[in-house]
Image 1: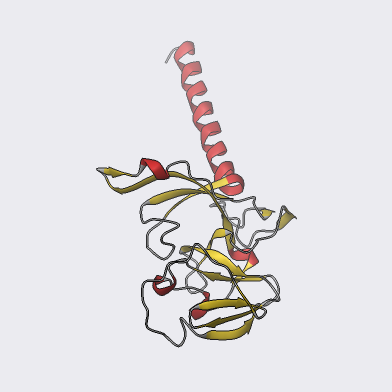
Image 2 (image 1 turned 180 degrees about the horizontal axis):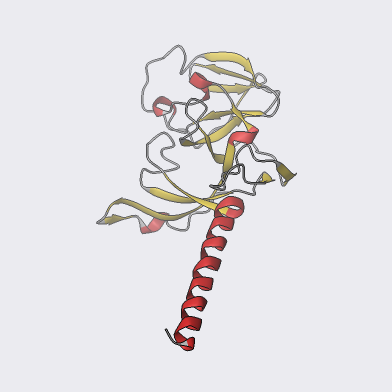
Length: 206
């Protein structure tokens, strides 16, 4: 191999290494891609939506392992606090190998109660224009819940599709350190290869 070809090879390796490093850093600290696999957040999120999730919306953490998983990593500083209505990705409490996405409904210290499908926060009914109901019949856990006080540094999560969501009504609140990030933007959406939902691409979540 000539000196020129060796230099070209070395330059290519350096470019690949830098690209991989940037990809790891971006995934660890900035954004992570997430695909919507179920209808638990209908109509807000459709099956086949692809999101970018902001990983610095609430905390900047050191990676907790070599795969740059920042959940459970040491918090360098807090950039904000989850607010009611935020759509967040988090480690599923019953199986942390899975990521779930739901909406923040109850904040630390608040008392949650659900009566006949209506959510009450500290006794006041919550205005939820995003909610979808698909069943009229009542379920004792799903539609009449609590009262329950959310522990410190934990959040009560619910899906917008209230009759089709497995959420904090069954498995409890989510610890802050298990939050992966906040939904930022839909960068791709399709129902199938031939059904690209162009109108959803670019949708930003506040």
